[in-house]
Length: 218
Image 1 (cartoon, helix red, strand yellow):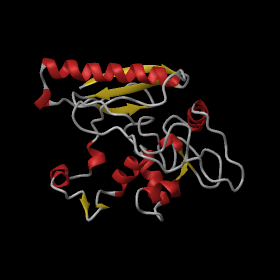
Image 2 (tube, helix red, strand yellow):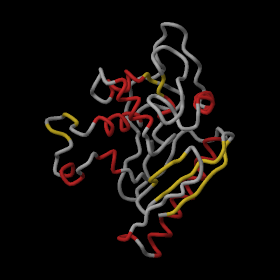
Image 3 (cartoon, rainbow, N blue to C red):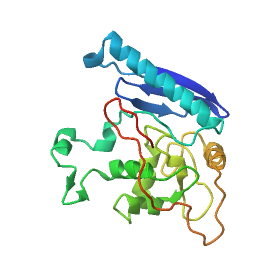
Image 4 (spheres, helix red, strand yellow):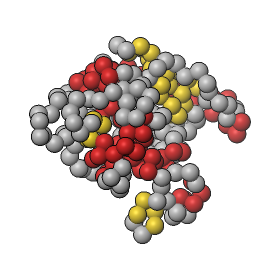
């Protein structure tokens, strides 16, 4: 496991990566609690993890400078596959075209389909995840997102207007409400007028895929 960090207008963003991909993005400072990977504890794996962490830091620096719209990084996020990867690989994650993963996994995966500069409400995210009535659960999924900004929970807004909060509670964000607004405005977001729908338009997914060290577009 390797770590890196990048300075932003709102403080330090911490990054942790394994040899498989980015594991964590912390908006509240450097990642300090990094678990060892006994099965990958060799020089080659350490070098690969360090390369991924450093590339992630560089891409975050470009993003915060307004020079990058998408992240080109492998992700190591078993959460996106659900609790049982083995059954998923045998077809257990989808049965008859229905996604059988837990709602949190479905919601975070759906977030990867919300493009730069666009936004959805918590209710719309819940619908994208297959559970239209689960707006509050969508807020919980956003507040426990391990890959902030890469999985763009800052693009999810309350249906009543405004940007909502940005912290560690339901429907909030770890960097605070001002950071959430700053990120949205960096991407060209403008507050919708009363009665106006969110900016999200359905389209083909270009999400990054979790798993081995292969490049993917978000």
